[in-house]
Image 1 (spheres, one colour):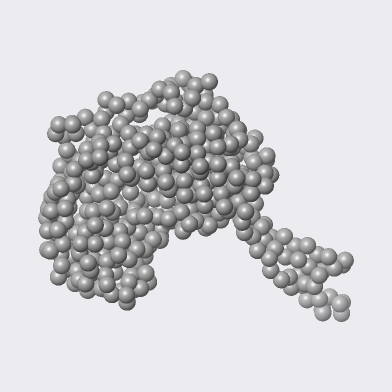
Image 2: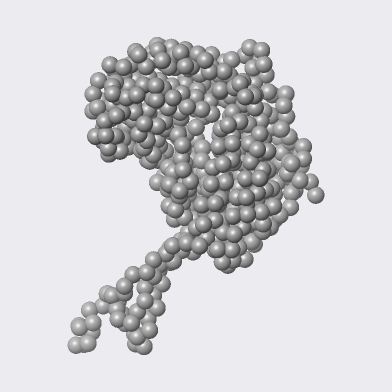
Length: 503
């Protein structure tokens, strides 16, 4: 049997590693060095999707009937195995996706944390009981698994986000077919191989690699898929929602962000600087929570911009596996071109402080690198302040009043993550009240989700569902209300019994 860790990677269907029915493949290369070929992957189609969904459907009865605490024991073992292989998986992640190794370790650690958390939910999966309006009658609500879940994951967190989606699905008793992004298929396949080592039964988790058109569309439209969880571009999410609506599937969408860090006049500017650099340029700005807007009180605008210029000038671009690297590559050359086009737009709208160019010198020539870029004096309605760039670019927007800051923060189509740096506790609580977002930080950057709290946003960031935390269980279960009448007679709820007795 071909394993997922060989040079040629296959789909996982019903516990077996199998090539695409067509025999076609595609190649994944490292964004830090295009000569570094990760491997060949199955370029799958609808027949492969059909086989994977059939396997997941066949595995559903036994998996859903397994007691949830037993499913939790398997996830505990998965968490331990992921911990044992953390460094190996982290290095593969950096090689295939590009983020620096410290961040890759954080990516894998998030998956470990979610595995442990969701394993514990196997002994909870709380329903609730309520008093009945009738005598001698018991009333309760319980959770039931739904069926086959389609999990469509992005490339920027190729281990953490699949874990966010998969582990709550599994602990609730669902089975899954996963589709990785075509830029990072090896990470998901190695991750899945470790799941099998942890004891996930055959067919409970399946993986099909390939393009959105060839794999994603038939997966979303498949009549036996009951749930779809997607993270990615807003336009793709809208398309998925439309396709899934035809068969009334439940859909969870985690989409774009245009996240602000607000720095007030009383803020610790050095702490704020640390938060901005980490949030704006960590993962080369390729996070849905990246701080692409810095909304700052005008009285400290110039001072902070100079601090930011000096710090950014010292950031070292390079291969994420090197200890000397601060900022790794962006995902591919298409991303370099898109970021460059926004820099051109921004240069006509505001002052380019630093950066603004692809990095092609020396060891960077074979990779997809873009200089960390800062614009200053940006207006709140400028395109670079409104549209998601998804790269190492941030826009500094001066404001004079709190009301103006709130208006700028809430002016974008998205509402994922916001941050405020201040020493004023009153303003801190005002930010919680006034900023329209799903995540709110005070004296911290815009990134850093924890596994036991819900993750998601408002407005065009998604469709209202949340990932991780206990709230994720609501997406992966149906509520069933149960009534047990032990009165020995027919009691009719909502019927005027006095009127019935007279009749």
